[in-house]
Amino acid sequence: MKIVIDDKIPFIRGVFEPYAEVAYRPGAKIDAAAAKDADILVVRTRTRCDAALLAGSRVRLIATATIGYDHIDTDYCRSRGIRVATAAGCNARGVLQWVFAALLALGARPEGATLGIVGAGNVGTAVREAAETVGFDVVCCDPPRVRRAEPGTERFVALPELLKRADVVTMHVLLDDTTRGMASREFFETMKPGAVFLNSSRGEAVDDAALKEALRSGRVSRAAIDVWNREPQIDRELLSAAAIATPHIAGYSLQGKAMGTAMTVRTVASFLNLPISGDWYPAGLPAQCPRTDLTWDGIAACMPDYYDIGTDDAALRATPERFEELRGDYRFRKEFF
Ligand SMILES: NC(=O)c1ccc[n+]([C@@H]2O[C@H](COP(=O)([O-])OP(=O)(O)OC[C@H]3O[C@@H](n4cnc5c(N)ncnc54)[C@H](O)[C@@H]3O)[C@@H](O)[C@H]2O)c1
Ligand SMILES: O=C(O)[C@H](O)[C@H](O)COP(=O)(O)O
Image (cartoon, rainbow, N blue to C red; front, side):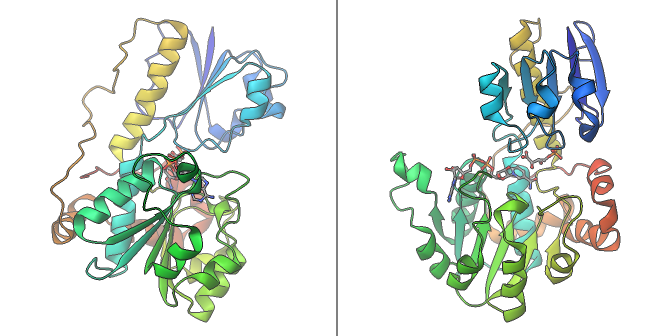
């Protein structure tokens, strides 16, 4: 039994060694040769899991310690009987913290302001609840959930209505064929003039040229960008044009990373029937702790003790060529949500 694990997944070393041969490799270097004699891959977004990686292997399970799974060809895996498990929701509150840090840094306030959430899944819902609690008027768009008539979606609106109404638009869609490039020229032209745009979902959900044009024309007054097309070779013009720019670390909270690891450990343990508890969590780390007593001024007061988004912004602007290193060496911040 061999398990190949991305060497940047924290808190996992030693967990499987009593039960299996374990190899750690940089995510981008988990290639066909590394996967060939592996039974299980434990990956992050940096390993593209497709036919090129898996065709000659005996891999039976891919567990990704991330929310997003657009790096995995799920159709191919299904066709080969390879099980895919994600860490759904693991770092949603880390992203929530990034969204609020960005709003604070941009000088936003909730009074009289409408926040538009595009994609109301795990992250979007966390943002909606916190934003409503602190007094934003919140409007959500999530057609797949509306089509399924899910409870709580009765007041969701279509995308054009959200874009016309929102003073701040924040993207939380998953990346698939329907959302790739959805923040297009038409999208930005429909936005309320002077509105703010945040993207912490996936870079590929945005047409960079359209966003740069919208920033140039003033249609979008300011943008906060965490995720980029073609990471780590990001668009330097967009980097300059963005008011806030961070290197895909919105979800890099201590609790979010711990939970991502915990969910993958539990998945692998259950798959292999290992004597590891079903509620395993890295020893000594704080658990996620949802808070419901938030106010805007309370968040503003405690944010500096938890997260200075300006430090991440400055580091990326100073050394954009170190995009992956800035992520790999990141000091996971504590959540307060
Ligand atoms: N920047 C980071 O560090 C970071 C961290 C975590 C997650 N993410 C990304 O954030 C995004 C959201 O994560 P999540 O956990 O909430 O995912 P999720 O799957 O729970 O939610 C995504 C939502 O998008 C909706 N959606 C799909 N197509 C849509 C469309 N055309 N218009 C509007 N909504 C649509 C889905 O119905 C779903 O409710 C994902 O892309 C994920 O990869 C980024
Ligand atoms: O999808 C996710 O969970 C996030 O994008 C995640 O924070 C990316 O993390 P990484 O692949 O760098 O571990």
